[in-house]
Image (cartoon, rainbow, N blue to C red; front, side):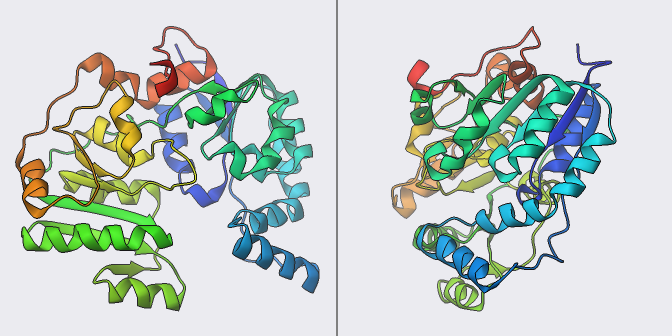
Length: 341
């Protein structure tokens, strides 16, 4: 179905996913042209005002993507040169198009017969995306609340299926790796303490390079790390675990990749995202909606065997089905969000 199909794949390097995307697309038979991530190390602010504006947006608006936009704008010529070096494509897939200069995305669309965008963050959080949506033949969101916006289609995240995970020999091993968010720390500390009491092995790490944050994380008996792993490196730890921990970002209700790793790799998941109960893959044996449960309740969940999913449901959330659905390459199973279930 995918052989002899070409695809232009564009995604920001901050998501550390591009390599996994490229491998899964090639695994399915696509000819892949990926606009490689840009080196941000040499970026310099134009002036003090630009630096202060970025500080204001990051501190008061929580916009950590503004600096990235400045970097991309500075590298616009390189982006356009990379684009001009390739021929026309059958498909184009852009993740977070608002992180790229409009002129570049506009030019990318002209290269592709079918041009698809995916905003795996809330639309309200990044309003600049509105001007890009009209460039897309199909534009997808993962937060059901965003389906009220004209021109949006539903999707979820997925699990990569180009790799067959090894069978984990470790029982009662919990894994979490995530960036620092203030609201996550006390929840993780609570889960961590209860896992210790239950003598459950764990790998719970919070990513940050700020000294103040690392001190705070340490004070909560959690492990800080400044090391940024690629997605594939993180998967090695996922495969070892039988329990994954997922702490929702409250700015949206969309499901994170941890949920779909649980589906694809047969892992139980502790999650703070209560919306998971509204999906067709939900089983209480596999998902614990964390509300501060007792040690006894946590112990019971971990001890309960994983309930295997129906093959049709499991396949629905694979990358293979996801990309077919996104590109409208039948046959595929449509992916809906809770409002439509």
